[in-house]
Image (cartoon, rainbow, N blue to C red; front, side, top):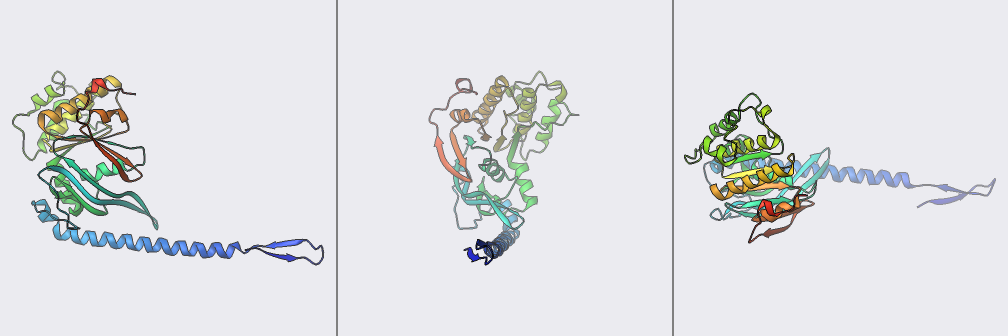
Length: 312
């Protein structure tokens, strides 16, 4: 509170402020709180690292291990999350991105994850695909608890189980379309005898362009080759991060149709992050994310075809 002191010469009140002392006290209090949060964050990380070292190998060998005694339904669900949290430490401040996510995704479904920028949807995709790790909670994907796999085992998990399609095609420019797909095939844990390179290129409608280099292909064609490369790995799950974001409407619809065909024909679970709310109508399951939490999970009994939805 400010005190009023009268000056004897001019009798005008003089304001003597006391805020500085108060502000300093608040600053010290904040600093103390931030240091405590940093300490707690580091302690959680140490405990998780200790459990990971103990169980990572046996999880990779097929054992179900939970941090909090959760039991996943691996017969029905390809992905199951229990109270999953993800935060980052910046200086002494902890920034929460996911704030306790519980989720179950059934096998062989086409899933769309929607949310505005900064909602946490890409972080969620990264965690369930093994590109990043949660700070807290169990992340079961195809029976593996990704929260307890060390980095080298996460790499093996990704190689053996999942395929990725990104907005940027990431093709090797010095290889032909076929050779790019063969890179994926060489990473396959088990090859699908019914799905060779020739068959894949027929599925993605690129069999006439197999011997072309990326520079000779349009953006939509390059994206289809990236799908072919992912399929050649024979993955259980195909993760897609804005796969149509860099394409015009015609090519975007074609890519969406191919992804749906892949899901139905090969029983591959497809999980897509997108900004386009119209994509929810073609999905079996729609997950809405906002402010680090899942606000809704909807199921479409009769999904539409890509040709039936608005694009803009």
